Image 1 (cartoon, rainbow, N blue to C red):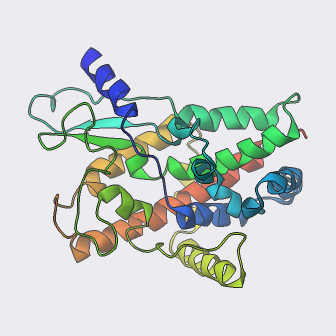
Image 2 (cartoon, one colour):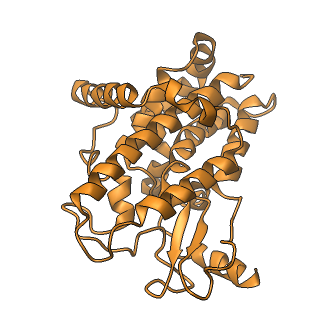
Length: 288
């Protein structure tokens, strides 16, 4: 266990944080926005308005989904470790018989902390507005499998491993490592949209939101939506990483079969993240 702890501590020094790219995060928020009840929409309005005063690119519920990544462009790196809850995937004859080390901090803690702040009677409106944006973003992050898993193997040794797929090179058309490939929705969501959203961006997100909801309506996730434990969400996505994400050879072009299956998984995970985010926000007892 001590060896796994050392792996994790050293891993933090090298991990690159991104999550879904902005389009993926906005799609999570877009799906959530269609599932918020009227009371929640009304309760969130002061937070969104307050947030937009300091961050005009994040002037809506949907565009605020990208704000946690925008912070890096403002020189603010203080919250980088909040974006992930890495569970090392140990793929080696030496370690296969042992349980994988599991970490329940970082994004798991951040989501729960954001929930607590939004219910606080003493937290300032400005702080609540920021933590709403954090919450929207981190629910997306925890549903990106490579924010939950990093591979340790003969190719990717400690202390870095493969850095959540950042060192797992592939020959994609536009992305050259596995993490970037999945951040882009396996190539589906590469076209960056201007923020604040213009008519073209709104149309782009509405079209994708319609498609994802039609393929993965809320009633397909009844059992999963009953799961409220955020750590369990992370465990689910660790299993996706182990069972599917890493099933493409290192330094090779992903097969059409892998791409098609992975795109379905991306849409499924974005849908589930959106529904879970809406449920979470609908259940909060807001105090301004």
